[in-house]
Length: 159
Image 1 (cartoon, one colour):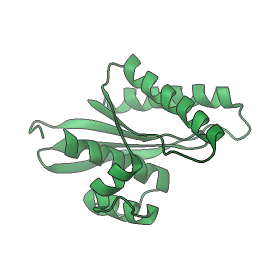
Image 2 (image 1 turned 90 degrees about the vertical axis):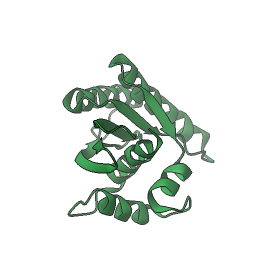
Image 3 (image 1 turned 90 degrees about the horizontal axis):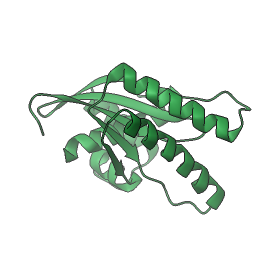
Image 4 (image 1 turned 60 degrees about the vertical axis):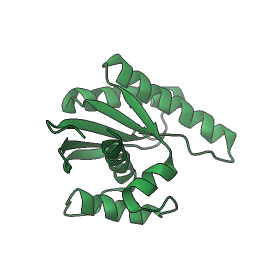
């Protein structure tokens, strides 16, 4: 890990809610910068949601100016339609990162859980709790934002 510090933006992609989490990594410590959700309005057509999420990720990148973007990889689902939609959202996130010249790394959900909790089979609430502890947060972050922060932490362990 670098000693001069850098910012990682973690993204948990979703067509209804895309979570984001930004952390500052200095030496072996993580400092929470911000987290939240990019949520297209209900009833918006899918192609418009993709564009909304692209713009939202661009806005977050412009606000926090991350050195790296870490993205949760596709969870292989039984539902091919859901996987296809998630692929479109991931493409929008990757495009936003590339447009801004930020390197993208991808991590499987199992690796993220393993990295943050020590178990690749951890439950969502366990990931949320460990993110709270690792980042010294006052409260547990919302599920999708916690997942995004966990992806950022996973990348920090890999840099």
